Length: 128
Image 1 (spheres, one colour):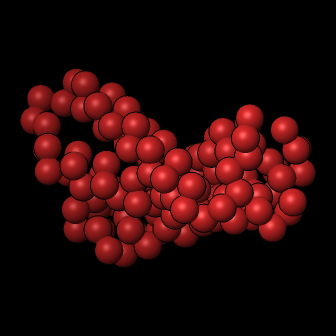
Image 2 (cartoon, one colour; image 1 turned 180 degrees about the vertical axis):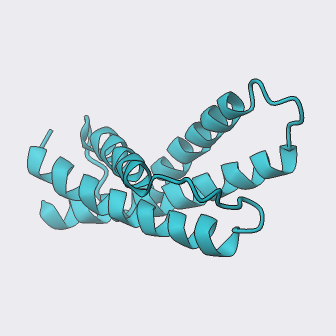
């Protein structure tokens, strides 16, 4: 694993994830997922960076993913399972599960992760 590629592409992916989250959840879907006013932006940023580094780590292991389309495919797969994982566990004790919101969140997570995956792959390709 190339540590320089891992760090630079992880930061790039995390920053893209942060701004996509702001676009989707803060602007486009603010009525579906309203803010409570108690959001900790530092934790949101750190969560986005964690996703960027997770995907960068996965992309750097074995055969490096360094092209846009394979990055989109791998990112979408990762996003699908992360979206399902987090939404299932967030609703484990919720007496009134909103299945429509779960589906929307999984799709948004998939799209965001596919985009982050493409950015990480392209950055990996440029750093070769």
